[in-house]
Amino acid sequence: MSLSLTLMLQLAIIIPFMAPIAIIATRHNQNLREAVTLSTCVGLIYLVVNLYQGVISGENIQVFWWELLPDLHISFAIEPLGMLFAVIASFLWLITSCYAIGYMRSHQEKNQTRFYCCFAIAIAAVIGLAFSANLFTLFIFYEVLTLSTYPLVTHAGTDKAKKGGRTYLGILLTTSVVFLLFAIIGTWLTAGTLDFTPGGVFSDEVDKSIASILLVLFIFGVGKAAIMPFHRWLPAAMVAPTPVSALLHAVAVVKAGVFTILKVCVFIFGLDLLAVLPTSQFLLYLAGASVLLASIIAMRQDNLKARLAYSTVSQLGYITIGALLATSSGVLGSAMHIAMHAFGKITLFFCAGAILVTLHKSNISEMRGIGRKMPLTMFAFFIASLSIIGVPPTGGTWSKWFLMMGTINAEQWFLMVTLMLSSLLNIAYLLPISFHAFFPNIKKAKDSTDEQGKLFISAQIQEAPLPSLIAIGTTTFMCLALFIYPQPLFELASAILTFRE
Image (cartoon, rainbow, N blue to C red):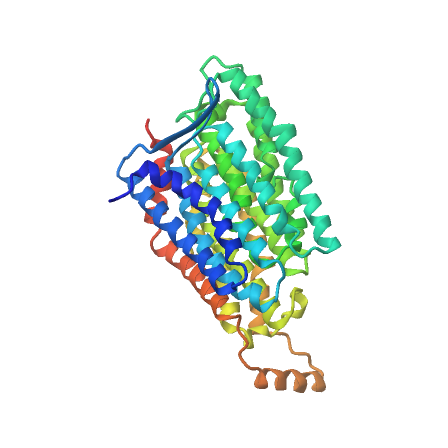
């Protein structure tokens, strides 16, 4: 007997929440424990794919769980933006889990059972957040995501890890309580509802000043979007193991942030109201400043994960800009960039982790010539870099194209130049890494030349463990495939604007 779509929606949230029980029960057998994790990943993908097919066929999939007060309830409904986010998160959970198996074993990490448990809870929170029917439900899962990823950030248990975890938790909880919660309360008092509604929830007579203040509270309250000056949690969280960094940057946390901003802009304010709010211009310039400043800071980082962290801050600014432009091209570009950046950035972090566990190198200055030992990893790094930059033949080309069109349609020439300059900075801080890995500078001194020549001749292939290498190959392939065949992603992103009009 086939399952109904409403039951599948509930199972997609419940099953990852229940997975830690089985993971803990099998903790004494790591093969069985990891089989439970992978089986849960596959099960979630099955459910999400079926829900996706229901959405594209026009099904109205909704679930009501619990009403606390009149018009304040926990409920779920699937629309194209949430579906896009859930598809990416569920697929990349499987890939990241596969990568984590190779990484955690090779690096001989402790507390692996806790790691997989928290990982599963975080993905459950992401699915709940993606399918939330209202701001109240979204806020609950947003906070569950923050709390479930804290043990992952502090996984190492060192003083440095604990300090990074305090920064992570402090900034995200503070922005949620001080800004986001008040924005949600203000929306309820002003609009009388928290339900995500095509075209927005505010009436035509809404006070523009109040709506402007609420918009600022939302943008600053969604700390996971890492808009400056509330971005420090992201570099601080880089003390975590590389699979966690991949989770933070591609699968869960930061994508939950920009997803929330995009959903609020489209389904709470609506593009028509957003375009006339006085604070929209200020927030656009703030996002533009984040894009440029984070790129400049990234160029100065020698630690590879730190450079990638600031790169993420910059790329998230792209998505926020697209949402605030209040144009169809901007929304389309933002939605597509959530996916394109996910595959590109997760590949870069996978490569960084592979270099660490294989060659024990974490600083870029130490990575000259490593392309001779890790050719597959560094080739993947090169392809992923092209996708982040936004050039063919990679998927990042399309999202950046639509974002650029969004700035032109909105006549935001300064932001158009900002995005162009940022892409040039992307080239400056990403491409030299893979270039020097394959073509290191050889000093003129004879001894140095002889020494390096012998090193390259005698270098043996030392790639990452096979599960990690499979994960790297899969995400690299997706960076290329999304350039050739972006149609399903484009259709989902386009449907955001026409959903139940």
